[in-house]
Image (cartoon, rainbow, N blue to C red; front, side, top):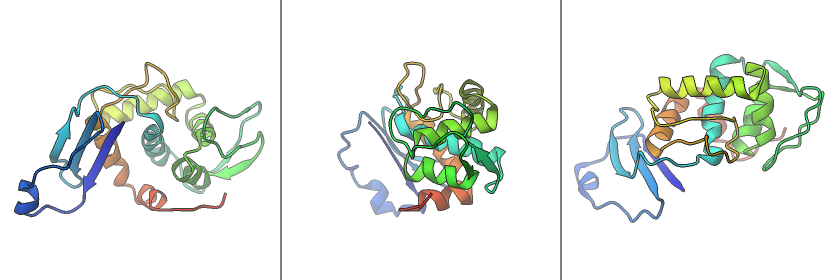
Length: 186
């Protein structure tokens, strides 16, 4: 389990000097969102499996390469993906915006794969884009092999790298709007 927290405004001297709360996660980081200053860290560079937090990077890559109103057709032969899904069916057409909401609000693994194939032609090619984007954020100890975070021993990150990726994603107004949404009808 990785704990990742951002502070959007500076802390007062008393709060900054206070003892940190007990953290049961194996790795954690508290990072000031604007400056990237690390305020608290516990094993921030330990390799961890990111699971669905992978979708932060997936959304970031998609947002930088697609128009939100762009149409995406679920490809021929698409049979779905393990885990959380919105049960996309071959031939259905959605906007990138709709699929990003499915990805980030419902944590839909199938939306992740459809977006990856739309952007890069294949999951493998998209993973290459993910790794380049992660590196450009300063994430140096991460490697991604899929857009949804399904288990793979070659799919890993650290609390610090994930915080850097999340900081980059939060710079996008559309990302902030989507992750602030509680419900979305697809």
